[in-house]
Length: 71
Image (spheres, rainbow, N blue to C red):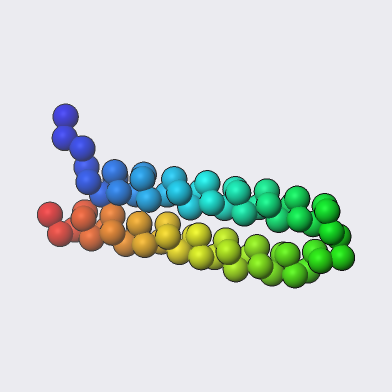
């Protein structure tokens, strides 16, 4: 059985961003629960961090598409 490299790249490339977004969300909730006055600053920082983590998944998608169409 042959492994499709684009599927493998996409599978591996989405695991880390998914874990990172979960960790970022959990840390933001803990921070907001400890200091509710800083909720707006924490939310802005959380959204920016999630955007950077999601960019990694988009890069994995681009690599998977390149692997799919180059072969």
